[in-house]
Each structure stands twice: as structure tokens, then as C-alpha cells.
Image (cartoon, rainbow, N blue to C red):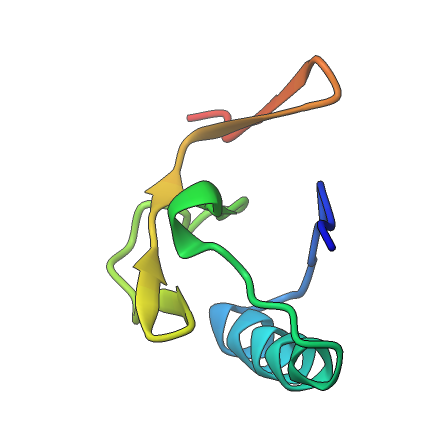
Length: 79
């Protein structure tokens, strides 16, 4: 089973990590795992470039990016 293009949005990196934990627990019930190498995190706001705790999936860190492509459209941080 494959699930494509899952987007999680939250007001903080901590909340995103909590949401990922919930998704991982639920995915475990249906024998599904998330692939950190195909995942990315995009921070938007005044503090987008500040150092913070990494977000991880399955014990692997997700890279922070400055832009992401979704359905042919780019979402990016405006500096």
C-alpha cells in the first residue's frame, strides 16, 4: 500500500513532531511505514532560518528546505 502527498501543517515544529508520532502509530496498525528520505519540512515565518530541533520520521531526520513542489506548484519561504 502506498500513500502519496501527505501534508501536515502546524504552528510549531514541536506540534509537527507530535503529529508525525500519531501518524506513525496509526500507520503501524495497517503495516505501513513512512519514508524519511522522500520527506521534507518547510518552515514559514519570521524565524524560518533559526536553528531548531530536527523533525524525524522513524528515527531519521527530515531535512528542512526553502521550497517544496506539490502538484506542479512551488511553495517557498520568501526571504
